[in-house]
Image (cartoon, rainbow, N blue to C red; front, top):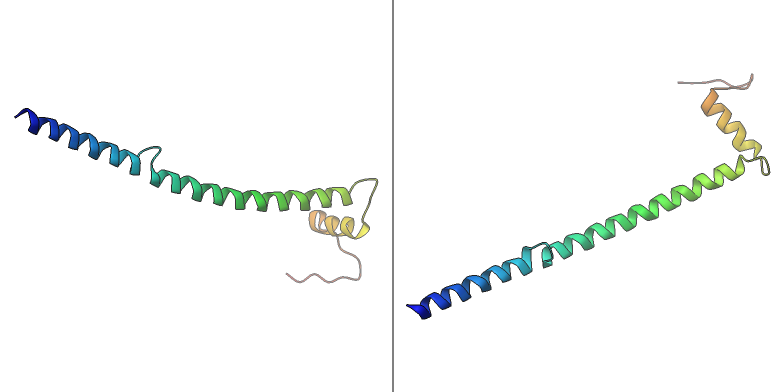
Length: 91
């Protein structure tokens, strides 16, 4: 009876540790989930860095040291709703 109990406990421990190695907090499935999340966050980071670079460029172009009149005109039109006398607006 003692050997059956020993093998039952050993088998139960083996199943438990196998399950933990595959599906536990540090298991294989969790590792794949973390890698996929890392890849998605890396893509998001790249998009955000591109957007930040674009906004820094626009900010620099609107600064006092470098004033882009075309950009200023575009911003005034979109934010303030300004038009020239010779323009027609179609909505």
